[in-house]
Image 1 (cartoon, rainbow, N blue to C red):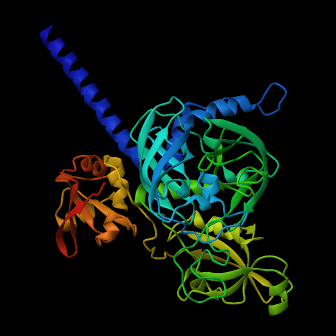
Image 2 (cartoon, rainbow, N blue to C red; image 1 turned 90 degrees about the horizontal axis):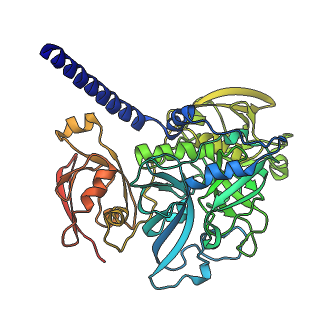
Image 3 (spheres, one colour; image 1 turned 180 degrees about the horizontal axis):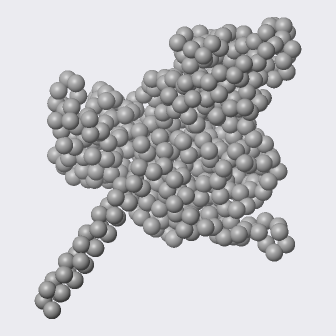
Length: 514
């Protein structure tokens, strides 16, 4: 009997170890998945209910019930630094209006200000996608759920060229919104906008998709090419805004920014980003960033801390009457190549000045957004099929996209004492150091600085990208959560950073002012 008892106990212990090992393996596997892959695993076991009424008409009650818990209210505290965006008056110059901060209210002297927007939870462990303009100037970010719980959030990554940001709260088992497929969105189909407009609680409005691939010039100069050159100029540029909005007449107002645009099945098809209005409030035209672009950007933020962009390497202009007359061509659509980047992806494939890009991945190019969004979903080293016309004959080529060194282009500042706020105030993005890097520098811990923002502490003190931070306040760090946790031990308003680089070991003592 004793032997049997011992055998049974051994079996139970062995089973527990096996289950624990499996759970650990499962956790590591999940960490390596993209957000879409993790959602697919979840919804394979938890399918969405059928969202049609018995008459076959869309039933918005089911979609609203499925989505609303996963859309959050974002409240930020910021330091207003005066009007930095230039003049006003354009019906599309409405980030401040849409976000709840009219330009004319900005003061010349720094002062604390409050604003709010929306965000969409995309995983059950606290990752939230929102607009860059919602959090770009934030000193403190608070997220309030529909169950009235409030959390501080940290910025994982953000990019003004896409007007997207990924933030994270420290919580688990959260509701989130299922990704849809924005490529399958049809003009005229029913959609819902979910968010927190005009300081109201969670609000759902309905409308239809009015148009796709809209460019409204809100993210940057309309004369910018999305592939490394200014149109009709020859100097390379690093800031390259991407616009290919889904247009909708669902009611969107100030505070909806960063909220969800979903189809009648409750699937996320876009992140609400802007409205076109002469008054700053709803006038019938709202714009959302397609979710198929969002998926790529948030995965980059999570893995690298910044967007990994691939470039075609051409300067172009949409074919119009002026182009047809100037270059004596008969084509009525496509992108006329004004110039190519030497040794760029296009030049390497044989595309030359004067060619007309007519298709991308077999899809006819009507406007620049057709090429812009498709390429923006890809990374350096990815391949894309492009069709171009020369001397009246079309030719297919496969381009291998090349990277463009990104410049430090973000701002960060802070003025409060929590670990999350200090993290945001550092003005940097991080990713875990690889095993090879740890072996190279003979270190057991480390995160790599992937981005340094001009007005953050790292930028002010000259900390460069590529530094491997091994310890924060004396604690070893291997990921962004550990960095934030270690910042909670900041003593006498001094953050101590230890790191290594090719120049050897470095130590910094950063004063945090309040």
